[in-house]
Image (tube, rainbow, N blue to C red):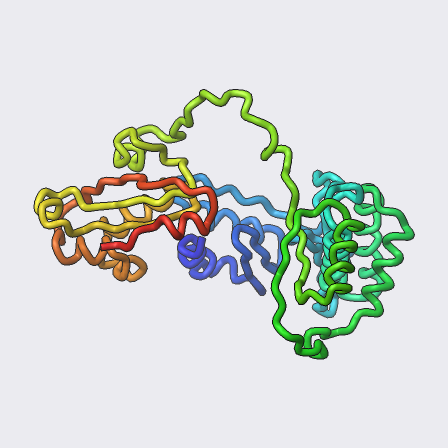
Length: 336
């Protein structure tokens, strides 16, 4: 996106925005009129060689209207001051962590507390804080929470210490005891038992099984298909895997004859991401070994030293498949 911006809005003298900023693909600008706001979008779109980027403009029709940006809406006063408050897209459903969901009560309380904290942080004055808080109230009441529960959490927020970590006493190191979450009552009983027996453990609950962990696939014999035609990763795998495979230990090696015979140009790695994403990074580093972002990568060093003018020829092999991150780290061999 920066490449498109630097060749458009930063050199076009017709635009000259009072303010311009971007958070990923969300742009914010202050201009003197709507024509210049649209001109910003048009100038960025024309720099896209594939003509795929299409930008839309949200702007206030009057001075009293708010303009949405990220999770807040903004209004600029006559004196230039910013008036902000919480914003939710109209098409966004009133759904969040439900009160009857199978989660510890502490998780629900922390989630709600963070919601109210966010509402306070994006609100510029007390009136807007009340408006933002009412939005959170509506959302939570629609998800099974009662006014009594919300009032109790609000009281906790008001009475909490500003920096409890600074006043926390230094305790002796304890062992963490992980137990599956069954109910808050069950967790409390375990903590009481550990305390009464003076066992130095910190009880932590882990999430239970989800439906996707219990239910089997309705089509277990179907094979994964590559979403791309002439996929570079699938060709390198030579039908011994799929570019969408995740959580694997793999080997990438240079397939030039002299490298195969001498056993150089081999890299062993592991990844949780689709193997196609990781292989693409290796291929790019071999194809452009002198680039600043690639020059320290193993295959970039190999191609810079042995194949300065040759096109990358790589073979990809999935060595092992893992079930967890720890399992994957253990199975990964040392790179040669």
